[in-house]
Image (cartoon, rainbow, N blue to C red; front, side, top):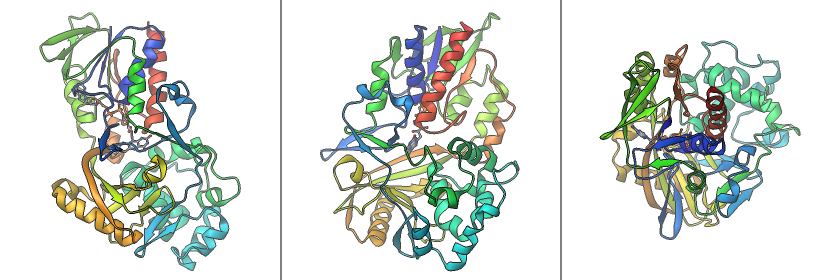
Length: 420
Ligand SMILES: Cc1cc2nc3c(=O)[nH]c(=O)nc-3n(C[C@H](O)[C@H](O)[C@H](O)COP(=O)(O)OP(=O)(O)OC[C@H]3O[C@@H](n4cnc5c(N)ncnc54)[C@H](O)[C@@H]3O)c2cc1C
C-alpha cells in the first residue's frame, strides 16, 4: 500500500495519477478540507482566493479543465505595473516603451542596454539571484523591475536566493538568456508570454475539487500523521495517524517542511534535520474592494519605494467583478508582518493601495499564510536523498508552482509504477 501524507495539490495530483494507473493508495490529510494552500472562500457574493490567484494554461491541465467548471481565460497582454515615485508605471513591453518610461533614468537605461555584453547563464554557485541580475541589467533596472518581479514570484529576496538554483532553471526552460532584449524584442520569451491565464469562475478551489473527483482510492480528512516508523526489518513502514497505524510499502510526504521534518524523524534522521532548517516566509494577503481597478494584472513595488505592500493582484480584472484587489504583504523583506496586528496591516494595505492608484478601497478580508523562502537555507537539502521507499513531493523538493506540482506528481507516479 502507498500512503500519501497531505492532500494539497501535490498529494491530490499524485492520487489522481496513481488512480489512472490502478495503483492502490490511501491519502491522509490533517485538516478537514483538501487543497492545502489553494483555498477559496465566499464573501459578500464573491469568491476570494486565499492562496494562488490564477493558473497558466499548460498541457498538465488539459485533462482537468473539463472538471473545473466555467473558466475565465485571458491572453497575456494585460499590462504589469510597477509602483515607483508614488505612482504606477507599466512594465515596458517594447523597446520604444523602454526608452520612454519615466520610471528609469537615462543612465539606468544606458546601463541596461549593455546587457547583451554581460555574462550569460549563471554558473557560479556562490552568486545570488540579485547579484546576477544586477550584473546583467544594472542596479536601477534591477531594483525597479527585475528584482520586484522575480522576488515577487517567490515572496522572497533575490539577494538571498542562489542564482543557479532559482533563476537558471527558469531561464533555461524559457530559453531566456537576455532579459532586456528578449523581453522587449519582437520574439518575446516563448512560454512565459504566450500561455494564457486561467481563472476558474468559482475560484481556485475548483482545482483541488477536480483532483478529488478523480481519486479512486481512499482520501481521509482530519487525519494528521504524527510519524513514520520502520516495520520489523521488512523494508516496509508504519504510518502513525491518531490511534491508527497503517502499514505501507511506500510513503510520500507532501506536507510543508516543518511537519515533514517531524514525520520523518525516526525513519530518515539526517533528512529530518535538513528539513527542519528550511525557512518559510510569512505572508499576509489582504483582499480589498476597490471602487474600480486600473487596467492590468496588478503591480509590484520597486525596492526603493517606501511602502509595506510588496505586490497587488487586480483579481477583479480576471474574475469579472472589476473590483477585487489582493494585496501581498510580508515575505522576506518584512518578517515583522507576523507580529503586526491584523487591523494595522488592513489599514496600511488600503491606504497604500489608494495612495499609488488614486482609487478608494475598503478591506474585505485578511489571511495569513507562508511560502518557502527558496533562500540559501535550501542548501541543507543538498546531497540528501530519502531512504528507499520514502519520497518527498513538494514545492520545496522540486519546482514551485501548481504546474510544477502536477508535473512532478506524474513523474513520481511513473517511478512508483516501475517500482511495482
Ligand atoms: C499565497 C500563495 C500564492 C501562490 N500563488 C501561486 C500562483 O499564482 N501560481 C502557482 O502556480 N503557484 C502559486 N503558489 C504556489 C502553489 O500554490 C503551491 O506550490 C502548491 O499549491 C503547494 O501544494 P502542496 O500540495 O505541495 O503543498 P500544500 O498546499 O502546503 O499542502 C500540504 C498539505 O499537507 C497537509 N498536512 C500538513 N501536515 C500534515 C500531517 N501531519 N498529516 C497529514 N497532512 C498534513 C496540509 O494540511 C496541506 O493540506 C502560491 C502559494 C501561496 C502560499
